[in-house]
Image (cartoon, rainbow, N blue to C red; front, side, top):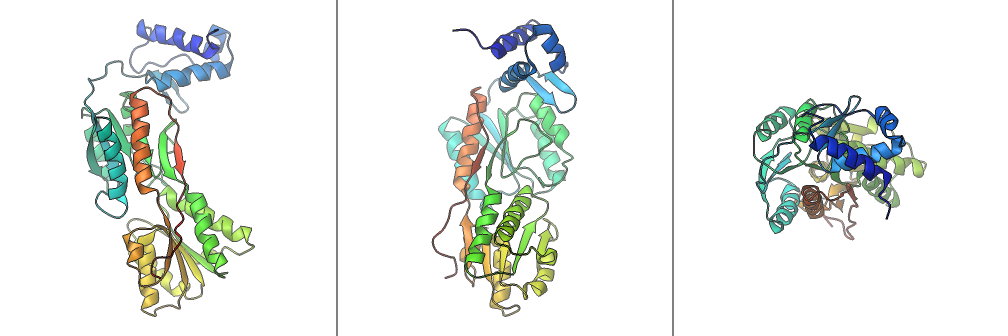
Length: 346
């Protein structure tokens, strides 16, 4: 069979790399230059570069070009760093269990780190990992809705040929990143539609502003409201950060008294609101939330909570890492939320 054109170009570049035509960090010819050199189309050139990127021979820098990775790789250590915002709290034990089971089954050991959703902690951890003998990193980004000051360290890790797999969110400034996330936009739609089906018309939303999941859940909430010809009131949409959650929720309670329902970013927020409702601080309202965690089961009021694919996120992340380490083609995964038939608190 005739070899595909992009493989011909990839083989040519690969031979040049192995022959020493490029040194570590040296920029390869650009697309236009390669089109002139080879006579092939730009699409073919990009396919060839994609293949070399999957082989961890090159990496791309947005707006700059394609560069040769570090040609010298350490011997396999069977160690995978796992960096999450938290470890022993909330839904993270199940996510980590899914990762660990997959890595262990394939003969790898996980090294756990927690950033506590602070960029300075993330930087310390990434700086340490640049000196560690590891084969890959599974990471939950820190404050993924904000510009991240640690992109330079992620680029250094990529330059060293260290595979990265993101969970729950990712940084758009990093190109061709593999990720495993929940379908948060659809989840927001489902949660809000549930309240609408219960007869709610004035529905508030409480979302996290510094993580991309909060933005996507809000997008789903807003879409459900508009699809049902309901108004999204700015004064009834509340945004909090990791640092100001308690203060924001306390301020939000006063305005929730005018609502019939509320979509909460997660079960921690839902439990706070439910306790306030139970204490008669505001009138009873329907509550929808995310994660179907222990927090929802502790609620003194009914909470409709979508079940997070927690273990599946971990399992998929581990499988993606194995595919990268074995130089197999891999694609990002967006996992659906699971619907629970009964409401917690009933």
